[in-house]
Length: 381
Image 1 (cartoon, rainbow, N blue to C red):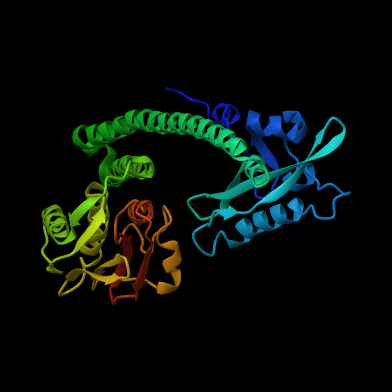
Image 2 (tube, rainbow, N blue to C red; image 1 turned 120 degrees about the vertical axis):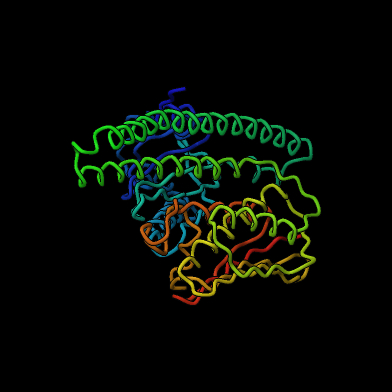
């Protein structure tokens, strides 16, 4: 399926627009144009908080200030840590019949970064919560009616998400075919024309083939990350000790190298076993990878019970990293080491964080250069 992303955005049932780094409107959904009561062409290119000024007759209207402050926070902090989703409530004054009608919105501003951490654009999404505010003063019957409306909105949102997922799979499918061609022809040239292209040409062809393989792996990892966001949690009592040992055995076979493995006994959590296997595959895989140059490699898996949950950790004595950059570690494509030294797609820890958050937990890291690293994550009961 070949979908046009701009058309997909325009047809989205959500009130959504894409902003440039200087907050100008680049594209918007039909729903956005409809609720703003403006023509699409009149909004394209305008600074969003200038396009919708507050009602000067209402001293309590502060939507512009909140919107501007939120966007500036996203732009200024993008290189400091993993981009937060900024949430806030504003009042937007909409012209209706020549008069101003008060509406309440709960917007979300999400930064979209390039591979180097630069800000490509900002995705601005707003949910109309006027009905929710009004319900504070309305009867139970009005509350039930609003609930039905929200259910329908969720159904529409689910349909939109399914379209986006189909788009992702379409892109992945369309990319895989040329990648296979690049790999196949590169290998054919190496096998049949090695003498013609010479040593330097062979080196170039091997680099082309390796790049195509890495892109194919990256597509697979991104699809896994996308699926985890939508996967249904199936909680049960999971023997984490047994799960970690099984995953470690697979990782050891894959790397063809043994480490001193210490896994605590009796680790049990109420969680989704299938998703936790993905967590251990990524964490233990990293531990094996980053201890490759360590004289006496050691990997430890343990946990402590705190309150109504479990705090787990995977520790190694490998290359480690500068802890000052630990907040960037769980964002996609963020790497602490060069790919030449330690190959990878930069998606693994982002996947770990996504799984842990689906369980209502959090994840963080402690490390030092050449002194190993420890990844912690919580699993609330």
